[in-house]
Amino acid sequence: MHRTTITQARELLHSKKLSSVQLTEAVFARIDAVEDKVNAFAHLMREKAMEQARAADERIAKGEEHPLLGVPIALKDLICTQGSRTTCASKILDQFVAPYNATVVNRLNAAGAVIVGKTNMDEFAMGSSNENSSHQPANNPWALDRVPGGSSGGSAAAVAAHECIAALGSDTGGSIRQPAGFCGVTGLKPTYGRVSRFGLVAFASSLDQIGPITKSVADAATLMNVIGGKDPQDSTSADVTLPDFTKALHQDVKGMKLGIPKEYFTSGIQPEVEKAVQEGIRTLKSLGMETVEVSLPHLDYAVATYYIIACAEASTNLSRYDGVKYGYRSSKSDNLVNMYENTREEGFGEEVKRRIILGTFVLSSGYYDAYYLKGQQVRTLIKQDFENALEKCDVLAAPVTPYPAFKQGEKLDDPLQMYLADIYTISANLAGIPAMSIPCGFVGEENLPVGLQLMGKHFDESNLIAVGHKFQQTTDFHTKQAPL
Amino acid sequence: MDIEHVAKLARLKLTDAEKEKFSKQMGTIIEYIEKLNELDTKNVEPTAHVLGLNNVFREDAATQPLTDQDPIKDSPAHSKGHYEVPKII
Image (cartoon, rainbow over all chains, first blue to last red; front, side, top):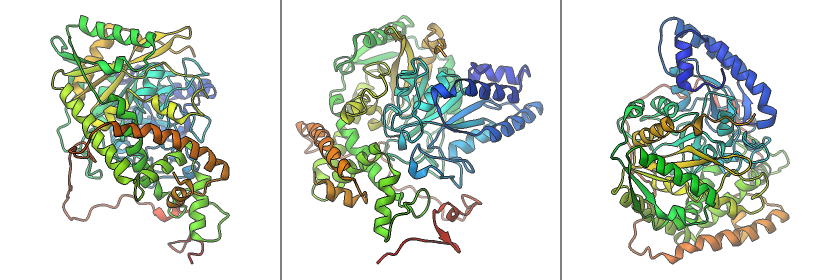
């Protein structure tokens, strides 16, 4: 039962072959069976979830219909839930209980979703492996000695291990797509501004977006219908019409133009991964799509640009953790400044401190123009690259990562190598465009999943969903099960 | 990078081991990000926000408060509705 998609669960629930209480119990039984191996969750919300499941069953009995009604969903632990902890996998927020819900949580609640728990992540969403978690790091369900990716590694691992029917993550530089790729599930980073960030604990405000991590593209469309749309509480959420994304599931892709950015296939991609991605592109061609080669000449500068901008924004966003208003406070201080310094030293993990240092440096007097302003200017060039490329095609196809899931500990001592793991995902955030990762093959002796990345124009998630769904109707990579 | 100065600006009290480790790592990272200097950006406008939004206004009307919960209860030290902090001067 726990292996169902949202689409399947909806049929079972609405035809009364299954109750939400039964489905939710099955999901918790699965969690009890595999969670000590996967560590996908930061903490569970068992009692509340069962209450929500009972309420959903009552709504179904009254004849209410909604695609998410009674469906167990997991949330990355930086999405605020009133009355339950939101830790951001950080010691500084370990006991923090938000006084309000994120907008996406209110929207899920209104739709009748059952929230089973909060998923593991890299601290404050900073990381590509889940190893920067204040909890035990999550493991990849396909190979437990490998990372699930990050920073939404817990959400991707929970979906791949069927510890929930679907999950929400957040993506600042690839944090939905990279773990989705590593764990063989579907992940969609919406256009910047498509989904409200209200109640999403901020990392880099001009890049962060919440999005779905699911077992199929169809499920991602269903979740987008619920979480998307303008929110008065987030002034950066865009006032554009929210289409019915499930309509795109019936759209033909014949004659659509698929752009292949050549730079994504030259910079150190593993041959097996490239082969799987090329095979995926051939599949899309066989569905009637035309391919056209395009160029994104500034790809090579994306990681450097990203780390300037993301760290600068993080250093200001994280200045709010001062031991006064909420969160952890160091007990060994005799004056206010001391208290700030000790609290932040004891409360933040190593990677967070590293990024605060880098961000503070690039914004500091004398270095602002050389680094931060320069980064913002190169961001313009990267954005223009995508605008030019997407004039020649409807959707771009590229790899998600240069390699499949790596071993735990492999990149932990070399931050730059860890940053370079995001080379193919980062530029979509800098440009603000929507991007999706779908499973397109398996490589190596351990049969590790590989992701195909689809990117589109601003607010054109529908075309990504159309192409991704057609791909999943023709292939079965997304239905393969992790050996767990 | 003067790591002690930057740490002070960020209100981070680093240990000696962290100072040494971070100094080395920052050297590598900054060397890497300096590759942006290969690009001529003299006439390029900076991008702070991808959608080009400027000021976003709303009606100045009272709405429901965000929460029925008193946020001060989240504070690690509070008394009689006030935040408590150690000595300031």
